[in-house]
Amino acid sequence: MSKSVGWVELVVALLAAIGAVACWNVGVRTTEFPAVPDVSPAYQGTFYSGSWIALGALAVIVAGLLFVDGVRRVRTDETPPTG
Image 1 (spheres, rainbow, N blue to C red):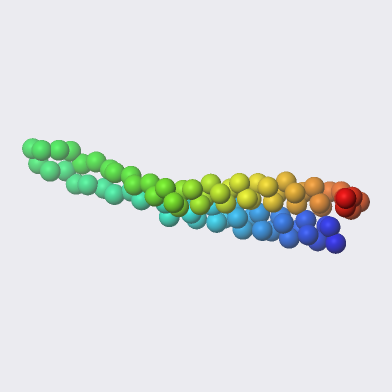
Image 2 (image 1 turned 60 degrees about the vertical axis):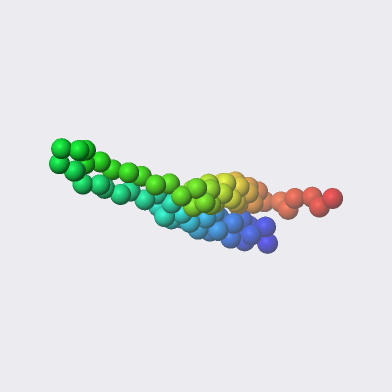
């Protein structure tokens, strides 16, 4: 039972890591502004959405914890003591 839970945790950790990358990509938006003659050169502006970046960071933390616990469950043969 413990090994199957470990494998499920590893799969969910992988999904959380993929979700973190997706959140980061949604949270960063780049806009290019054309040059205005005799006023300013062309430049690029980057907008960071804090809520998407924070959700991505949370997903990375969850993925890391699930990965560590999943590896522990898969690699150990005995069940942990229960109180």
